[in-house]
Image (tube, rainbow, N blue to C red; front, side):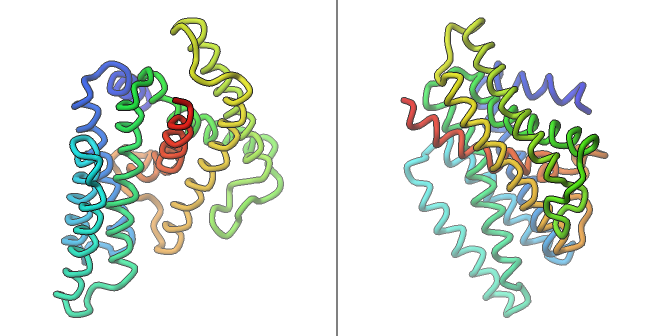
Length: 260
């Protein structure tokens, strides 16, 4: 899967026209919202999953076209979800409404962070940072936990994660962040963030990435689901692969907004 996925990711982020990147983000957000609603509601509420999918895609596309009026979409979305629940006369439960709102608004907002970063005028290589500072943390945490792990980090949420793995993930994030700065300075004429600030950003994103991973694991455990989906075959669905990215991308976007 990585043999195909990594080149596609690099093309979409670095070389594809902005509209292609926007369409990819719309699809990912829509599928993620559908996965969350199916996790919470099962097959019984397919109409809610469809509504969440539509609204998540609209959130990303709205940010692409008219970001200054995104609050209108959020308000209309809340009216739609609660209006549907009222129409169904109590069949739709509050946690299902919240899954719909969170799935459509929060997931759509997180994926649209890439569009806001791109629109800010930074080099498109910086759009790789949310992936680097998420996947690096996950990868280093896995191997550190596998070789050194002894103390459970959050056993009731994710039994296999360890404190040692968490520390390894943070260290790996810092290393990969510093390598990113080195590459930008060597081959792209400089980096918008220095080595020291990057180390701090990588640590922050490592903490946020692990919170994102554990947050979506918490939801799966509560509803007895192993994977959110099968889009990436044995690697699960959008929320299984991009749970950390969804938390890290807006953080990086916000940090970079202060660097202008």
